[in-house]
Image (tube, rainbow, N blue to C red):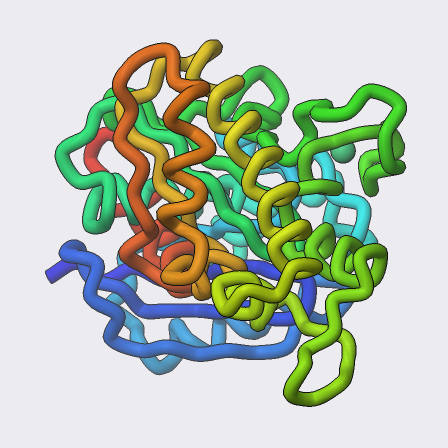
Length: 300
Ligand SMILES: [Zn+2]
């Protein structure tokens, strides 16, 4: 069976997996992100190829924006030196293998559509609520990239004009309100203290404290979910998707807030819409990256 190397490039870690056509991970390697990423990445890839000489290609999902056709990273401010790197051309030259690259959230979306929570849906929006808010769009089997690789940048839809300053340099972007970082900020603002420890709550316990009746935690939860519901509703107005998949680190506590989110979205729906929790965890990016190569519909 065809084996492909899937690589998920994050801010602190790079996850590399040897993945077969059915999405099964045969080897799973995590290494620290080191800058500059090139030629570091190439060295690491060559090591894997030594061990798996029968690899048929390399798929990469990375932070930032990517021109999937040319395989160049078009926008990424935090991984210094990565923006502008012609990753596809350089890695293809170094390995002799086909290389495909796309945004990490798009890769995660592909995994959910092909193998996970959105299986059988045609127009899917995947939202990754982690440190930031990421989005991936897969419509009719195709990842939607946009002109500059910037489609699906849901976290940078402006939710509050003149609001908080975002990492992109503008104000009021949704990821300043709907993300783990936003939860941390609101926990401080509302002084959400865990009654058991007497310390400021961490985002991972916020929703449980809210479910247990802590008023300050409920305030944060309700504000967070109201904003999240608006984001979903706005996306529906533009895209009329049939399914939204919610994943990312914050969704690990979704047992404590999923019903609340559905209740907030319900009155804002324009059309029927299925909301699902992601079936995959943070391996989704790596598996989806591999699928950029194994997927017969991706001929770019
Ligand atoms: Zn922004």
